Image: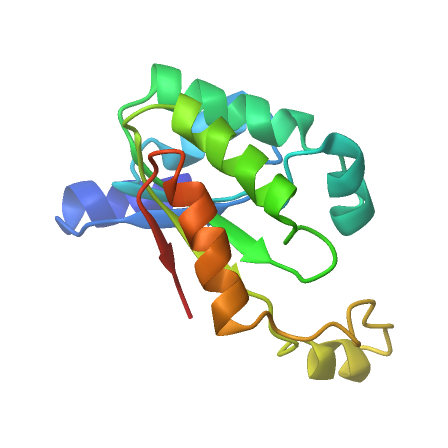
Length: 162
């Protein structure tokens, strides 16, 4: 991926972007994003134990890597929060995420709230795997608007994405 980004940026003079959850050794992450003009960085939960329930792994490395990227790098970063009702959509959770992101400084150009959808359910079925979020409904527009306002109250530019 690093080589592809390098060639796109330097040989083809093309703007580049990458999306990551940041769950990697920092040196690998740093090498991969070296030639990215924009980084989309997913944050699913601020609480390590709740993050583990949602994803199967702790978020400690993810949060540490994001902090290092904002301190040591010169990248523009968009933090993306997939909003999963019943898992990470409480006002407290979103407020804590907003406050964390606000402390990271100007490298974060915005936060995007991504409403949960169940588009992956059919893929899981084809693979013979159980889709654990099958009964979760997409968040309402009103709820997303409240969550957006909470993050914005931390001083972070926020939008709701499709």
